[in-house]
Amino acid sequence: MIRLDPKDTDAYNDRCFAHIKNGENDLALPDCNEAIRLDPKDAVAYSNRGIAYRAKGDNDRAIADYNEAIRLDRKAAPPYNNRGNAYKAKGDYDTAISDYTEAIRLDPKYITAYNNRGAAYARDGKFDRAIADYSEVIKIDPKSAAAYFNRGRADLYSGALPKAVADLNAASELDPKDPYWLDIVNKRSSLPSRLPEAAKQIDMTKWPAPIIRLYLGQSIAEAGFQEHEPDDNTEIAHICEGDFFRAELIFQRGDKDKAAALFRAAAVVCPPNYVEHEGAVAELKGLGPTR
Image 1 (cartoon, rainbow, N blue to C red):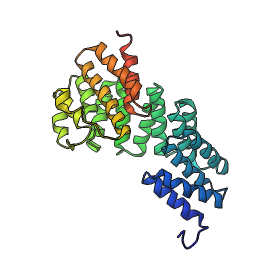
Image 2: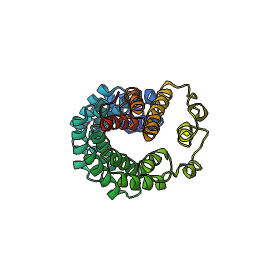
Image 3: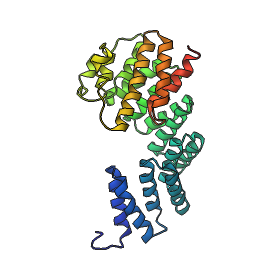
Image 4: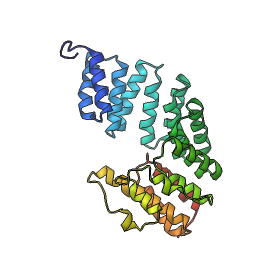
């Protein structure tokens, strides 16, 4: 299309977004730039470029582009949602929540905005509000495994263990990944572990197999925690998850001080957008003063 019509703004936008979907954000930016050059009033082009910047971790440039997209089209919900993601990544939860709320006002069935607002509330320790948003997602889409999973964790941190068990069971039935979360709430509720059966549905040659093996009773060395991918971001993720889930296991065994030390380590190493960071902060708050 672009070869036939070099001034086709939609074609540049479409290729820009295709690159974003493929994780090729450096390739996406020139196409977004060209779409904006051809039509400086194209709100979609600014929004797409914002997504590319956000994916590259440049939240300030992303926010600037979302601001322009919103100025050009105040009735479009996605730029508000996307700007909320950038503010949430910066730790500005109040502004993020305000943006998600506006996206929901514009589109009351915008599942992504409810999920994102729920995550922002949870990151801010407001689990009752997070639960309300995840419940709204489930009302709109009763088969949303992510919503049950997120609500189950919020139930756990708010102290509602029976609800956490029910929600994480529902999430596991819809999507059996991450079975150790259900194992955590089952053990806290004095219920039998379902992990041996769940592990049969997991590819045990890949991460998070070491966590599953650890929860099945193998030692740290046997579980394979020394094995990390060469990619730096992947290694950070594995260290983060390893610290957090080891902390949960040690907490189950009654050693609160050692668990707290690992939760603190997870809170430091885990990126703020990780559920393990949210969990580590919540668990430390629940544990109170430790040595």
